Image (cartoon, rainbow, N blue to C red; front, side, top):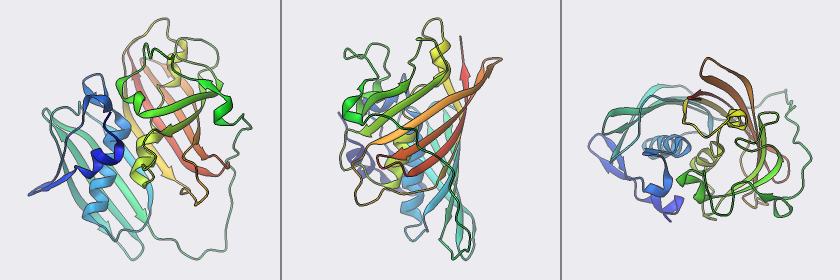
Length: 262
């Protein structure tokens, strides 16, 4: 198994940006797992702009397969006193695979503070059952990189409300960077798959995420992810995704549009 930290450590600079090699255990079918595609974009941006303020938001369009040796190009869109906007393209053997727009922003003094992202009450991760079967039948290759436990909700093909409530964690204990958080946040299959009559292909088209918190010193790596389908129709599903740390502090708020072929 290729650890996350080993994979990103092997990202190499080139004359036009960076190059990356993705092993089969980070793939979904023949293409790179979408969360890793986004994470590679973040890694390349941070290496290009090492003094960038914290990542606040990211939008990714998964426009084609990310296969073969990957190239990553980074260009600034605008830099102000406290913010930096960056465009990143992840390029595979068939052309652009992922286009990302990343927004970095420094903290500023403000009289306002408000938070209404309540973490649902669940059992601790070690008291929850495995989400994928032990023989991993039907699980994508990349999912072996993560520990996944079912804290509530349903499963693919199981019916019920299309919502998952999962404890998820990198198997690589050293994967604690902001890009590792991005790689983790896209981990589960779309909750629309709960309503599938049989397994069928899916393809995430767009992913928008806001980083609202960072892991703290008491962090153990476990994240609680709630994802639910809001609409399913015409071969597409929209879904929301919320991610908290083990103490119930919000980390990521996200949305996806997913193409479904069932």
